[in-house]
Image (tube, rainbow, N blue to C red; front, side):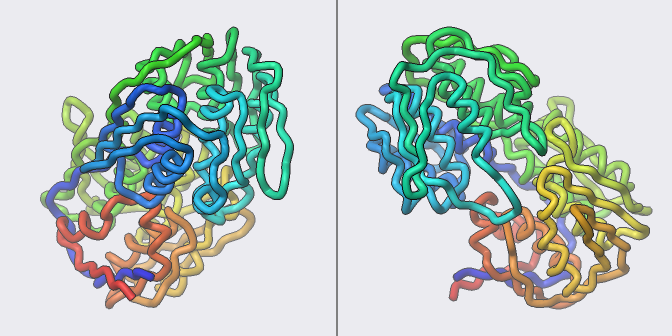
Length: 425
């Protein structure tokens, strides 16, 4: 099992290219099941989650070729049965349900696995599919989904306890594109990754309006065709490197990020600026430079569905606030249990108290190295950021979490001047 050795004290400078979005790639790869024709997807990040999705597509019968970030998929003859041994490894594998149901009118998908960061039910996915005609039975941990009378467009409200569901919106949208009539998704997720999936589906011939708003309208078509698409930049990877630059970047030159999307990074940019750091985008909005501020200060964060502050960035900001003077408060309203990284940072000398979905952070002058353990994808990134500022060498275990969603994060940080070593045991 791999681990990282991070020697603190380095100053980051230079530039880095941000990878394509992991969270956009997964449903887009699944959506290739909607057509028999070839689809070419570019800038797919080489991370374990996309590798699992490609394995699932191949297991379903699709022909898959992958080379240098480009994936070519031809789903000619496919099966409706997604294999448990792969599905169990990744929660996002559930997004094959919509395409399989739309094309084959049946699907068998195991309840998925993934990060343990609190309750992440699939109820809203099933509610959406049932509304348009699916019949769902549970058998031995498998979701057996059929549409004996076909699928029919309907208005569906996907409002959930903690806000809209991104993958649930994806699943219903993918099922609806080949569904007879008009499907309207109310309380839809507005995330950029949903918009990117919609853009891909539209290129395939789907009729979709309103992606990026709370109301998406889909007019079903009889058939979709193959197409080519470049995945949107990963706003969470970009945000992670922006925070790294604020924590330990060169004050004079900073760190420049290429292949970003400015409008997707507004919440992160606003909080970094509020905390006293400097963020400057180019005119096109596809590159930015981040420099640490002379007088950083604490801030308060409350996570919310897009366009609010992303839950996937709260752990990284917790690391930033741990070395920022003053008191900061981070409240996660989406995954209130997502604070397991705080206990590990406390081992490194951070002053953090967590209670009922809220972390109160008292900034410290410094942190010290300690052996720590990653508990989920974003927590692992936060521990890397904390380790960059800690005195000594921090050993980060359970590295497979970070490999789920960050493409070569250690190599990219080394290129910026970090002292990091990946140790294979």
